[in-house]
Length: 108
Length: 113
Image 1 (tube, each protein chain N blue to C red):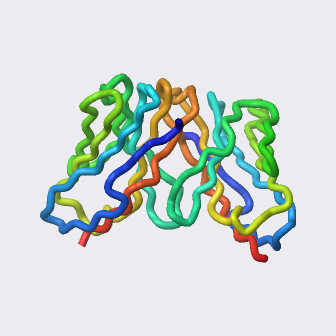
Image 2 (image 1 turned 45 degrees about the vertical axis):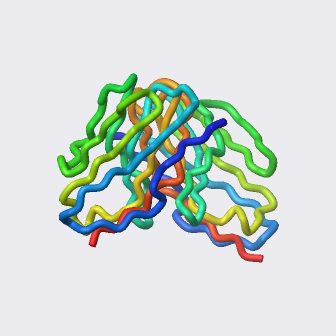
């Protein structure tokens, strides 16, 4: 099956810093989403991004499907950005497979 | 409105109990999913329903029994669970299978004692 690896696994930042999270996948995918899981377990949709670049406030994402990776940029991080970030790829039409996750902690 | 509602939020059950998890969406989505997430792990797919029919069962033990009574509602019936089944159970929906954006509920945190 497909492998979806995220890096780094853990990231500790001070408030105001910028960061880049990476998602690599081992096979062709139909689509890709980025989620933020808050401490209560809720998965919050960040981006639905099969290719190209999208921006939403301090966050932006780029997917290069032909090279099998996606990047999530967080600028001017805030403590509320803490949590786990997952990419998830749509594989074989019916399956949304999650990456290994990046755990982000932002300190004041 | 992109809301998927799961009830209950928390559930504690004994190994001999029967309980059900409920998931509801009113976005007109025709695909619904159950995921299981253990602590510090990513969510893992359990079941996929498309147009109220089960289309994927990821070799889930029979003590988990899904049901889709209508296009807005998805249940997960639990019976004779084991302590290792304790996890966060997440429901999701998308417009049609998974070539469209999926939205998740807040989850049910299940503890089996």
